[in-house]
Image (cartoon, rainbow, N blue to C red; front, side, top):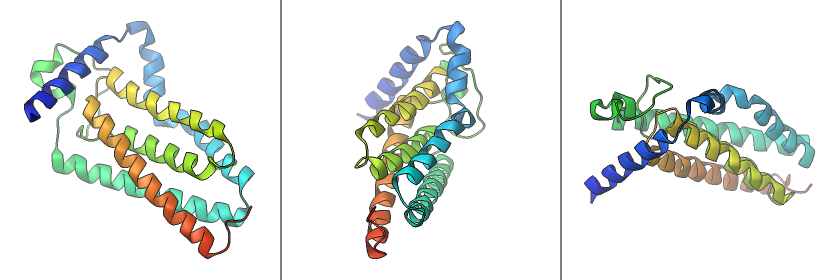
Length: 189
């Protein structure tokens, strides 16, 4: 069963990676760079200030930082423990795929997926009662995740696990934030 899942993971990666077209490489390299998304991060913070009081935002932002630190730390620990090679580092795959980046750390699980899903999930959970349009923000972590296959650095399982980890940590942080806001009677807008 595990061998079948590994084979499926590898085959899906090879298929998706090979869909890549050279003329779109610059676009996917832009998408995969988390620093290029700073305007989106600023937009998220602006939404907090638009929908909540300064006192509420201070609590919301504190939990967001905790969520992101926990997500990033757990990702790093698991990468070191599992030590899964990136697709381009596997000899039999190197000739079958396109690799546009060469990260130095291990593959499992994706830090880009865990971080982007953690951030987006927390923001969406926090703001969803204010506007339903916020759900469109989930396009961002999906694009980030797809870009990791396109640039040749992550298997689909790396991305799925990263997304679930980010989602889970974000929801735990959100629920804890809500409890804190209620305890401090800051939940009224």
